[in-house]
Length: 191
Image (cartoon, rainbow, N blue to C red; front, side, top):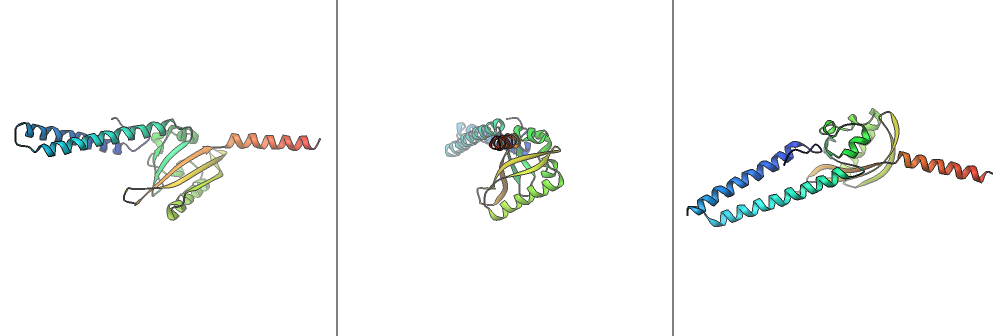
């Protein structure tokens, strides 16, 4: 599996490396078993591990496909607020490439005040463990942009906090249409 631009390449390389190591172990033990020197149980156990890893890799690829095709900005950040994953819709929203945002924090996407607000919100969600869903206006690429954001913590299987997972939608045009409609209703009422 080749590296995917939305995530740290190290993660995919680690999965691929582990898969190849397991395949090598299975082949080695299968050769030993065929020569009468290996334990069939070991071969079977290693074969099962390879199958599980392949299923995991398939599910991981499916998740990457879902993230890649999402219309909203979908992303994950580590505990320090650095992006570990961002989909193409998110990169387009902020006018950056996916590759350029991985490993960076919100100062790469927002003006100083906006980045400080976002980073404080992230810290609060991680501190409390409570999901956040809300709407706020930020300056994005020099333009006031209304964003609807949902954040939740991301834990390791051990329960240790890994960071945040977020979904952000640009509501700017929607809010402009609502404001124009409200203005028109008010104008019509005054007639």
